Image (cartoon, one colour):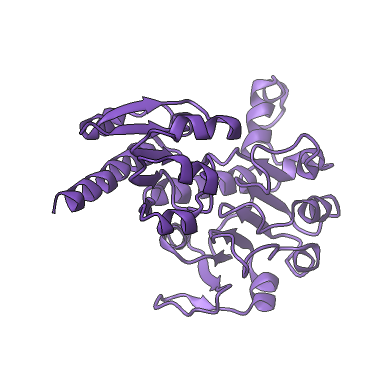
Length: 316
């Protein structure tokens, strides 16, 4: 039997060099994107469905009479009705630990953009203002070193640990807050939330969105942070209340923020973060710091490995 493999949103992995790995398991059909109204028709006769963010609900899974396997080209599986899949004996296989290096690197790209005022000084030179200067440098903006600062991490998983190592390399002191209450066997001090927020110079979020972390960072908690502190959210949108963060930036409650993930993706045009009064205090990227070419290539490699494991199991 030749299996039909349907990848519903291949645009989310971009131009990767190893996409042809999927062809060894059957006949792939690639769709750049798939709207909710297109899902049922595209999966109805598929044996294997691959999705990154496209939702596979009860109806879509039930009417896909030949469906054998659902592969999520991501870590989170909340876009799949796993209860229905389990009832029908359809495995749901996700991918983990493919983007840790990229997210850790991207976290510091965002942080250094703020601490070193890269955009401001780049514009200063390119605009011609530097050529008019009567001194060799520009001290109009304050740059701060990470050395000697307290670097706080929320979410000490594989990404959080890599971020911690980079922070140590910069000479920072690393501490963490555990939303689940878990204490990790790491050489970092665990703090309760009030002390954590009140003492950290950088708060970097790398946690999943769940009932412990949803709306964790509110205006009240932003008020507890140092006025010189920087907040980074590279975990999930919904952990930080965006309207509250915009208000905190406008009121100078914190020095800056870096956001890669949002409550709604893509963002709405009325997102309050798009309208902060001092946009230089805020750097935002479109849920993209994970997406190095190395990470996306590894992602496909791991999806293929999941399919191979499934095929091997079917043969035994």
